[in-house]
Every structure is written in C-alpha cells, then in structure tokens.
Figure 1 (spheres, rainbow, N blue to C red):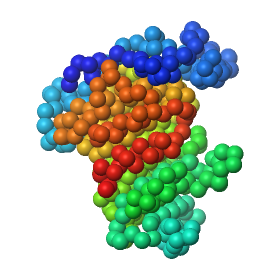
Figure 2 (figure 1 turned 45 degrees about the horizontal axis):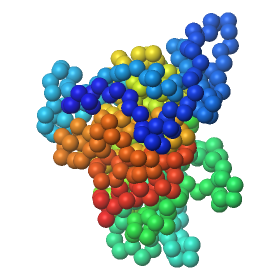
Figure 3 (figure 1 turned 180 degrees about the horizontal axis):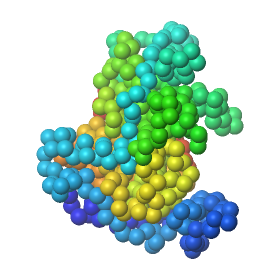
Figure 4 (figure 1 turned 90 degrees about the vertical axis):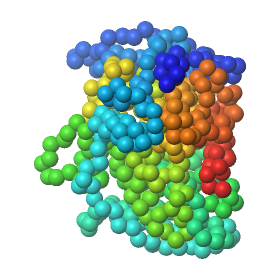
Length: 442
C-alpha cells in the first residue's frame, strides 16, 4: 500500500470545505478525570460554531475541532496478515485476511452473534395493491422473534411498483423507532414519518422498490439493552456475560440479515439486488450488516461517524472514548479496553468499509455535523481503496485531493457526498445514492 494511504496526515478542505472544518473555536484545555467524590459534568456545551464539547471521564479527553491538534497516526494495513505477510491476491484476501479482520471486529468492537440467537418466522399480514392512486403496492410482513407467546416482532413494509414485471431491486431502510420507542417527530409542516425515503417516487420511477424496518423492533437502544430483546433471548439463564458478547449494533445487523431472509423469498424482490441504508448509529449498523451478509448488494451509510465510517485514530469530534462511555451497550464489552489507546487498536474504519469489497459502499457527511468527523469519514473511504483495487474495483481517490463541497463522487465502487448541512440524510444524498446505484441495479 502506498505510504500516503497508510500514514494519513489530516488534510484540510479547500475553499468551502476548509471553512467548514476550520471555523471551529479552540476547545478548552484537557482536564484530569474527576475524582470519585466528584460528579463529573460530561456535557460541556458547544464551541462558538455549535460543535458539541464533551468530556470523556476515563481519559480526560475533551472534543477537538482544531486540525492543528490532530496528531499524525498510522493506520493498520488491511492488506497485511497478522503474521506480517502481504496480501497480493484476491484469494488470500477472501480466505485469510478478511476472516482475520472479521474476527477482530467480533472480539474487540461489535461482539459475536451467538449460536443460540432465536429463529425469526415471517408472515405476510396484508397487501394493498395499487395504493396511493395506483402508484405503489404495499405489503405488510411481520417477523416473529422466537416462539414465546409474547415474542417481539419485526415490522417490515415492502413498497413495489404496481406495474413491475418480475422481481425488482429493493432498497431496505433501517429506521429509528420501533419497539416501545416513538418514531422521531417530523419537521414542522411535513407529513408524519413513515420511515420512507424522501426519494420514494424516484425509486419507484426507476422500476425499483423499497422496504422499511425499525431498529428497536429488533433490539432496544438503552443501557439495559443487554438484559432485553433478542440479546436476552439468546442468553441461557444464569449465563455470565463475556467480553465478546454482542452489543446492540450487532443485534440490529443480525435483524437486518433476518429481514433479508424474508426479502430473498418474496416473489416481487430480486434477491441479487438488495441495498441497505442507515443513518448515524444505523449507518454503523448497515456497514457491519454488509460485512456479515454477502447478500447485501450495496450499502448507503449516512453520517455514521465514530466507530462507523470515521477514523477512530483521528482526534476530531466524537471519539472512541465518548462512545465507550455514553453508548457502551451498543458494542462488545471488550471495547472498554480501547479508550485512550486508539493507536493500539488492530482495526479502524477503513477496514470496516473494506469488508464490503468488492460490493459498493456509499458514504456521506455534513458540514454542520463535525461531531461525526466528515473529513475522517472521507479519509477512511480513501484508505479502503487498496482492497477494492486488489479485487478489480475502482476506489474513491487520493487523500490530498478532496472533492468540492456538494459534489457527489459516484463513478467508482466507493461513493462519497459531503453535503452542506447537518446530521441527516438529505434529499441530495439520496439522489446521489440513486445515481451511484444505477450502475449496479439498472
């Protein structure tokens, strides 16, 4: 791998991108962790540009938004085996290096799916042909998790063009909400949220379909998660927790695969053309789901940030320390040994992205979402490139020439869009993803 891709010196965006990254005010000096007698205040407010400032108690780290304070780092090489041997062919990647990286993510980051994970049984509960003035056919499907009388259910809704002849490509959206959690409110004046994409008409117009699920139908998202939902169902009574037990992200990714179990059997769905989309923590989820499930043909990870598409070794915005402190239940317990030791981790985000290769991945970030480190997301996408090239695919580009703001890059097998705006999947992101997906689903 070229040295420029292994040793990634943080680079500044030119023009509008430089302004987005560099306008942040200097954060306060780091302070020592609070003593046990103190009640630490972890939310320190925001800097002058509205970027969140957070204290990680274990390490004393405070959020950074100053490129001058981002220390140089060396990324682990995705094309070097644990024994030091270089990977030079696709066979060695598939049979040796890729399984090594998968095991590292299972044991150190997200956790393993246990062999005792319950079965999901799917049943169509209703079909509305020619709904919405004949523009779409809507099918409701329920996936019962386990066999208990009060078993939870994954609620899947499938939308397909009514005039489709044969099986159609599908984009599966992994949405917030579900379980006992209300769906996030819609913006003022907007219709109620259904989990449908803002480009629903464009998807149907291409002769494709889309489907929606809600993540907390699969597993709750709170501190008590390890004692709830599918994670609890898979654990034997009295079983002691292990360092590599699965966290919520692994459970959500498992639920995505169980949903695909149904989709590949539906007579209206093309089983070879199923894409998935998720935003924020669900952007992390879809990256891990794609790594685990080769039936996923393409992935759209929106603003996934730390422990998703953003490099953990790059000190910007939210860090691994913050994730371990504030969202520990989403990961394996083993993650707790890595706060303050980012450079010692055997993996980083470029390797997570590369686990999807040669299948396409599309990644986005926003100028007003510096907490998620969009520059770090871009750099990780670039650093995944050598694996894609090894497998005969086209990568994103080189780190010292970043694309202009609001200019999607969709010509290769790793796509990128840095939008003006915040922590959201914008209509522009979605339209760029459809253009990206055209190459594979047309």
